[in-house]
Length: 273
Image 1 (cartoon, rainbow, N blue to C red):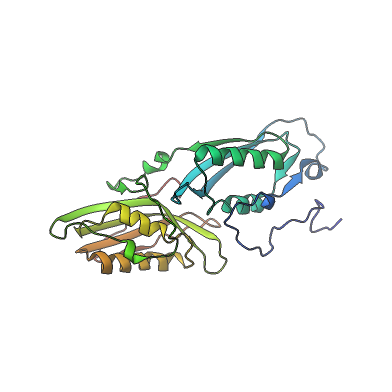
Image 2 (spheres, rainbow, N blue to C red; image 1 turned 90 degrees about the vertical axis):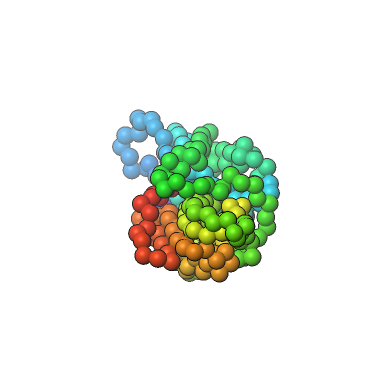
């Protein structure tokens, strides 16, 4: 038996692997619990493995991204555990996959994970408004607006304003920002706030613009700066600030803030952060 792989399986952990964003159940890698428990003198216990997926995302039937925080429970009595990196790759494979509704997604997840674990896995979605409660700056959420799109590369022409003679002051917010790391190709997830004064930025157009970053490869900081410049040039606000809070990776998160005037970044932290 390979001392670097005591479980006798071809683990992908630590290996370079292409990022797959279309559904692929074969990415899941089960490991027999009996192999893991060989050295245990006592095994008369019960319990479960609770997984929290903070970066679950898919497309609805119209191509509009959806995000959720999901909790998966795998019984300790299952024949297999699921190797963590393979679990992450599997969930990422849903990013560009369309589902008729959340029930269809849930059914697929429960089937695939239960097969991999060798026992029924349970799944619960935490409601989106669970983390909206952190929005203490009076932001208008744009995520519930309808969107029919297939544009997943940044497109400033999606940004539209209303009557230029009507001045507005508001903060718009979306939890649907996703871009990809230019080094690894892995997805980066964020909530983004846009605060401005000037002609109204049409909320639906801002949603479409934010979603257009979905397959864009760039660093967090550069994505926010591109958003700032595109909105400034396209919408010509009097004042503008853009703030993105990205989910943590390796225990660290990056939260770029750019503004047309001196001010502190809003004190806000989303549930996924």
